[in-house]
Length: 96
Image (cartoon, rainbow, N blue to C red):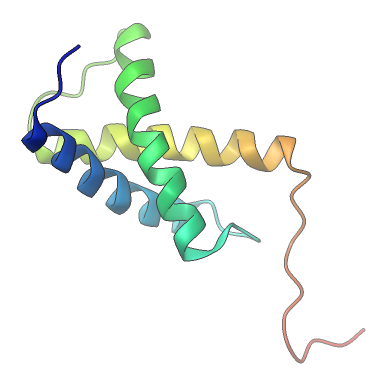
């Protein structure tokens, strides 16, 4: 697989958008903004690898890439939260 510089930049931008959206959809404790963005970048590669192997083709274009990366990021966030023993964050000012 050959990636040009332009396609690598598109994957990075799409991964950042998808990570932000996945962080909002997978509400709860989370990894914070930077952590969710990194997960989105990794999720973009996972979505690009996983969905075609499952026979799911979303089409072409930037919207299809964002949806593809969003699904990969959600899958990765779900797995990380299962493995990492996810707990909700304590909020400031919250008492017994």
